[in-house]
Length: 86
Image (cartoon, rainbow, N blue to C red; front, side, top):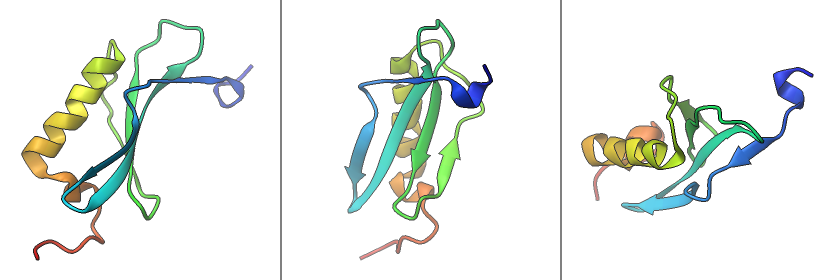
């Protein structure tokens, strides 16, 4: 069985996150039925994906990495097409 045929376990910490008028989808996942590390992926409304190279020992650490990215760079850093400013 190759990796493309395996089921994923999705963390309940993921989902649609809205800040400053922009919504992104946060996916935190690993292969189902394993103790593998977690992957963090953020998808903007255009379908552009940002995947962290770093893997996380648990889903909470992955979510905290997303929150740190938002605090440091803002949610608009995930979308080049979003207008900045008011």
